[in-house]
Length: 245
Picture 1 (cartoon, one colour):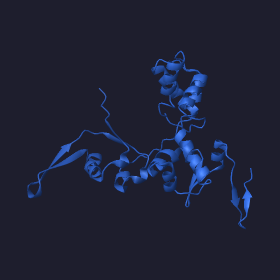
Picture 2 (cartoon, rainbow, N blue to C red; picture 1 turned 90 degrees about the vertical axis):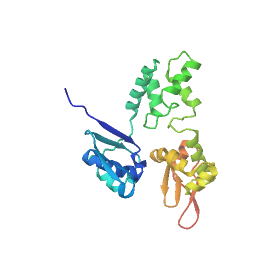
Picture 3 (cartoon, one colour; picture 1 turned 180 degrees about the vertical axis):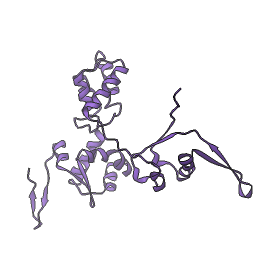
Picture 4 (cartoon, rainbow, N blue to C red; picture 1 turned 90 degrees about the horizontal axis):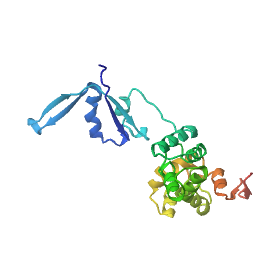
């Protein structure tokens, strides 16, 4: 009978408290845990052996891992985003699990607005399936998928209402920047960490904004996406000139 393979998976491992890190070091190195009982001179340590296991840690912020913890992992792998073909296959599998008929064109449409990830229910198969059930015969066609995503306010680039509001604030209020995230957050009445952690990553990856030492700046692609005219810029003599198209 083959030996059992044991895995311990810790998601967002960078959030692990340091005291927990130190507790699992012996488990990672010697397959044991040390438990201290009592206090002071009456304290004693009980060492409990563990069966061999493989520890897998997932994180989106590897730089926040402590050096000793990071060095104990001998293999470091970077997971990239899904491409549209892979996402279309995932959406198709989800539709099959939901016993919903999904056309290939609809799968590609949903996949193209999923930001390279499995997506939220509004971008994945769940939202269009609910829409198809309430507004049509339950089948997800290309037209139904587009209508469901439009109702969820997810556009062709995968941007939702909050993403577009960010770009509109940056362009219309701050003339495209540069401006700091705190000023943007105050204007939008949102916490700054919501902008930096939830909204900005996809806008950066989609080349809609850049982070400069002076603050956030809207790119030409952001102006094009919103249908805005690009503003004039100061030349070396302090005169206003137009950007070249």
